Length: 382
Image 1 (cartoon, rainbow, N blue to C red):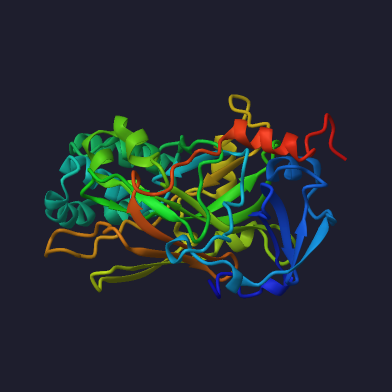
Image 2: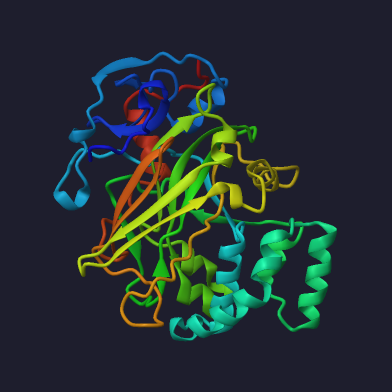
């Protein structure tokens, strides 16, 4: 998988997880070298909790890092990068961009039927698209727009979280269930309308401090969520439906939260049928600042002692016709999905049905038994 590192990898501090044969191991990749951090902390979550931002963490040198050694699962690769988080809770923020807010409303109006979405999209975007992009969530102007939309019969639960004071924050996936770059992502075989959601993921420690960022794919079943918002769990949380990687780039003087705020995220989908999709979005269009989203995820009402990773939301809701005019986009089995950003690298996955990809069987209990067997669990960490 040549070329999946940040363009300035030589000055980046990349936190991840690798398998060296004895179990998942937290590592830092710096200046082309792999540093095994298991002697500092047995998990990525522990590492971020016991070290301070900017601290120079020293581990065991495992040699040079060669991206060509990491071959995707669909090419028979046995050596792959694991998702770069472990015990962190995996959270997500929804409808944080005007475009995605409109698409959620369209899904709702179409009741999850992709055939109806095209006509609804044309009229709906023209009617409220401009106003929605201009308003700041929770502002007096947002309240006025809400009143007007209610009067016009256009209000939606999705608009409530798009322009209201409270963000949509939900649990995306169970702890340890995320897949990394080079792995399969899954969609349900009974879904006929689904898509990737390329996002920036902020990783926070147990105090809620943002420690770094990664790329993520919040795979979404649009037909399930469109039928009912109460089906969000089935739409969002399936085997292989959460991908994060390739590494968490730790914040430092070379890469800060301001780089996230102005980041461009590129999405490319390549299908066996010859279909090609390439789009780019800018984080500058997000309606809520990342710190606001983090603050709504962890506060006096919510604590995450092992830290959390939070998807910031997506501008993308691909509408490019694929199978027929007016049908819009949906995944086909075999699609290669590439999500990229110059500062964060490239997250690459292949789409398959979630009942056909490798089962997720290495949970928290298995991890604890593995760490205990390796003598890495201690009552206190250095």
